[in-house]
Image (tube, one colour):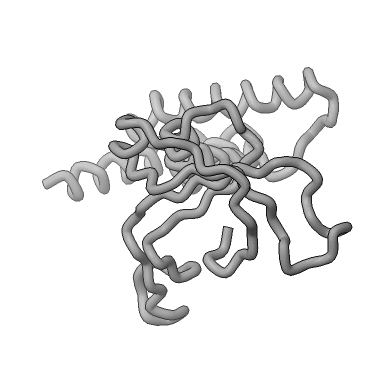
Amino acid sequence: MRDNSVYEVLEEKPLTDADRVANVLSDQIVSLGQGSKKSGRPDHSIRLVIVKIKPHVSPGKYQGGSSGVDSDGFLRLATDLLDVPAEIIALLYHYRWTIEIFLRTFKHLLGCRHLLSHNHNGIKIQAYCAIIACLLISLWTGHKPTKRASEMICYYLMGWADEATLTAHITKLRQHDAATKR
């Protein structure tokens, strides 16, 4: 949630020691949208967990570093998970970025931007094939798959590149890895 969100605190939940260790500052049941029409408000209880984080100030689009929305050092998590401990809510948000990175790899590296099937089993097959391809590329090249390695293997499998070109590319990747480890 944004820091200027309008809400009314209905209940303040007590914090445990584990919540405090996870930097949870407050755990509340709130009613959102007090400044908007009743039809635009949620009709169910919302839990607001506030977690202390490192403040972030965006240096601007062309100043280098990380961009994104400025942060005042408080992460406001709104959820409808009313029976989960606040520390777990904070942990779920923390692991969200691991999931985002995995999905980015899936979409960009393995060519899974579009589903080949909308059937449940078709989606599972596409996901398994992408994971297997990722593992095979990793085993074959000896390092984490890159977009270029994936493309070169695809070119080889489609007949657009011969085995010598593929081997030269993989050798070049290994040499680059060896040079960066020194």
